[in-house]
Image (cartoon, rainbow, N blue to C red; front, side, top):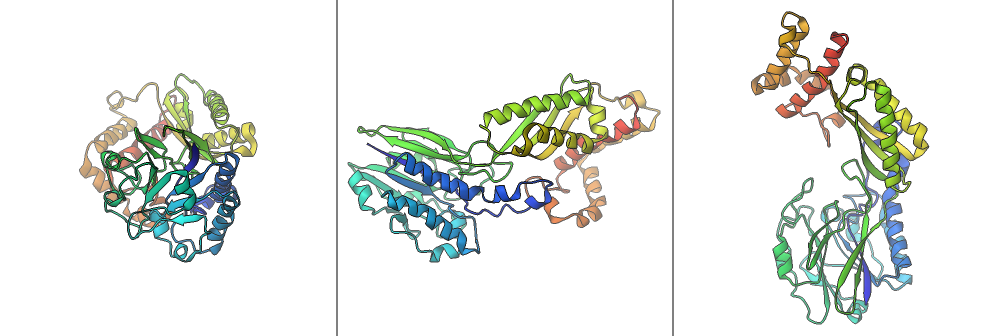
Length: 421
């Protein structure tokens, strides 16, 4: 009967601040990735000859100051006009924060639904197709009201699509915008809910389909795996099928390396090479930004812990040798431990035993951890802002964070104090 693309969270020209601090980061490739993903979206719409495209918010990324971002979108989406493919979209929290988007003239085949109240798209082609698309844009960046309650009733005899930028009842890592429940969406009796805002794709309900398509391009290590949109097909009886279509051009991934039973760091390197080859094959040769996490109780731990910078660089070198410029190692985390734990009581008369006892006591006493944090206050004031913000911010006031640092520091210190650990 008809087909359409469900996309969201394009975040065109997302600034991706802080990349320059990483050695060897492919900055230009990452910065242009959202543009190339948009090109892929338009290409897909043309190749599959879809009847229309819906975009469930966050086309842009905050207050962009360069008109070229908007002009690039207009030039690309204009390619759909030539194929008579209409576009219906809503603004999300990032779009609402953008002053320049309010003045951008959209092509006549693109309809941005109002932020004043929920409404139904007025495109003539859609009506002739028997499709009614309902939605409402964000009026402000922090939209905390339940918007879906005011969505129009379904139109009988039409295929009804709800377009909504929401966190539903909450999603990890996302602000609780336009909160609502799955039951509230189902009560509208729409045939398909095209959701945006949450960057991980997920089908929340199959009858009717309530679908987060995720973002079209991963932008950092918290957005791993394939990113894209859904190609939705509707048959003559109103049956719905949806198929994920990757659009990303640069992918983030996590490479886990199990070091258990390895006797030497060189064996860990070999395991990393095998794991990396598997990850590369899984992602069909796309350029990758990879975080490497080495874990396990291993005899190689003392050497790894004694010189983590060296072995991190060995892993980076192995990636270059194996993948050339197709893989960039974003970060290496060595999370190994000894096969045999050091016993503070067995070293009761020595300085290492005293140190281990102190660290054990410190981990279990929040008051002492708070005193440690206070003692590190001068160091905190000297740290750059990049280390105090973001995904892995150094949080001196969090006891669990301090315990984690102790866990990381202990093997490094003890391996240098005790020969043959």
